[in-house]
View 1 (spheres, rainbow over the protein chains, first blue to last red):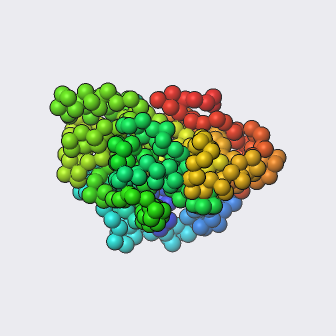
View 2: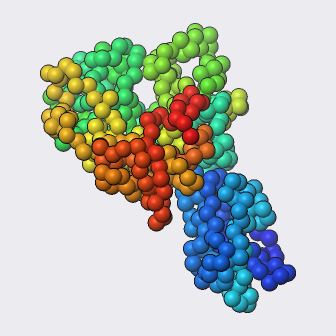
View 3: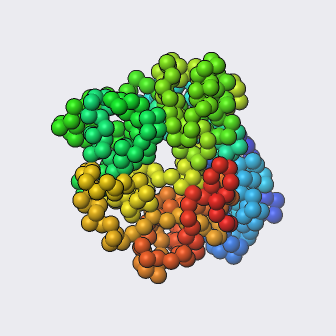
Length: 128
Length: 360
């Protein structure tokens, strides 16, 4: 059974989002997603300053077998990509909600997070 | 409904992730593809490849038939030895690649790919019309590949003394039929090991015993990274009916001598011999990123295409095979999601017997 923390918001395309105290939003991929992909060997994260719209492809995670796009859950400006992943892509497998985060963005409107799934709805979406 | 091998329940019990492969529910990985890959490079792993079919060919004209059917020449084989060959269409397109074992003058065994089994058998039957042979697909048999530096000893440990000695005495690319098992010192990983053809009941027992003795269950994911590091072609990806052996890195498997042997596809292939325009090469990606099949390759002499690509767990770099213009040099570029990244043309295999064969 995959780990789905109740304090995060989710996209059906398997990104998680966390609203931080400073108003920024941290984004990664879920435990379910990393498990389905298998051992990650390459991660490409967006550069700071880039503006993204909700559902824009803005990062790539590649396992041995396949490449997958990661989508921006909400609109905003990228303020940081996780530079540690260049040398240690396996962090996404080992700690998807912690050290394996992908990027941080400053949301155009933090209320957009309300359009995302909560943990129960995301879990239900996995069972469909 | 996808087909299942006799070991399906054992795969589920071992925690396999299953995927559809050529109409079969097959394990793609168990715990971790990279760990399975490393088990084969460093110790031993076991693969269920029972989706492939052993095909026995019996009869007084077996040898003559195979000398006509295959681009490589079974007359070069000694009894008990194995040979890799392409089976060509008249236009020299590759119908399949297969291993053929010479067991006796009136009994050869080939192993054909899962995705091509039906068309292979139809073709083999059709070509057999003028020969006194019987073609028997052995769908009753399972095939297990036990691969890695410890693989042979792990298998021998399970056999009675005489049989253990017989399999340990096998030279590379040789096979022996024991009472119950057919054991060949062949494989698709670049490591030492055995491919074992046996009944479903025996296969289940062997699988369980080897797992109990520390052999790692390995899926098709690791099988693909291992074979690509070993520089071995995959049918349907690196070659198919639209390509011939010479442009698929398989010229070495075509036996041109003796000249009077008229194998299927020879005339068409001879016409290509000096003039074919493309070659299959090994690629190493210089930067981060991963080569994947169908990415475009740019060379000073024109475009080509990646046919197989992956991240090499042994080299910690991306490697691949690509079909590019024959005159192309050693520096090329690959289009990876809209960016052109530099790649280097290298001689493959990339890895063999646990050791890197190229400079990174």
